[in-house]
Image 1: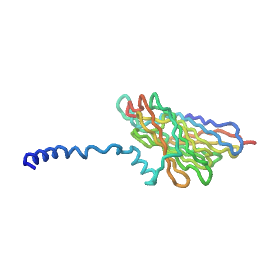
Image 2: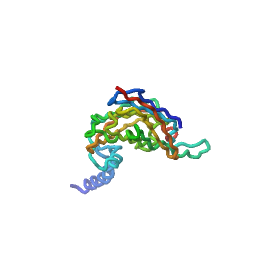
Image 3: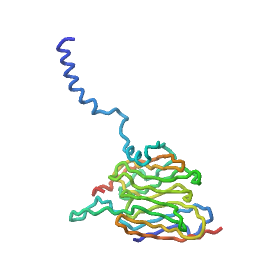
Image 4: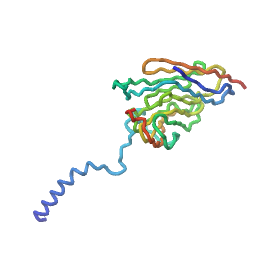
Length: 151
Length: 106
């Protein structure tokens, strides 16, 4: 290799190097829920499924969005839902609520109305009586967020 | 604090009944400001407990992610006649409670 070629490749490398770490591989986008989910579950594995979140696909504003969580569970003393946690991916306080259920609930369903600071994914985590964690979510498109005054 | 608890008047033993509650409360997030610039302190109903004849059937811990005038709907199994009493407390320490009777027959 001539000295000129070596020089050119060195200069090219110099410019290329700083670009490399700044570009993460596609599909490696960080899960916005991951740190909070880890904190709630204490690092336990969370399996997708058994939890369904019902919300309107499109909400006119984020001040009060109806949301219903349903967990597939027989709700018997041996097999029931202990808790349901609602998480937001964009709210300034992502932990929206935790509901505690028991066999006395009869049905693992809770409905409420939430505040959403913009279009986002809402996640529900359910802990069953055997200690396992399950999750389900829904995408909500919010045309006017509850955040106009930094709510 | 004004509140309303709604449940069926009557139920059969073992029937799963729907319990609904709304509470008049602004659920202040702490992110808003008065017109003169003073911040409005956060004040939300942070915990709520439902008891059926004294036994806990449902509990909720809430944050600013729950809309103003919080609404909750949940279920319980009708066992004996009596009342469901729901009580709550907000960040300012204000407590409230509301009850509704139920008669279980059949």
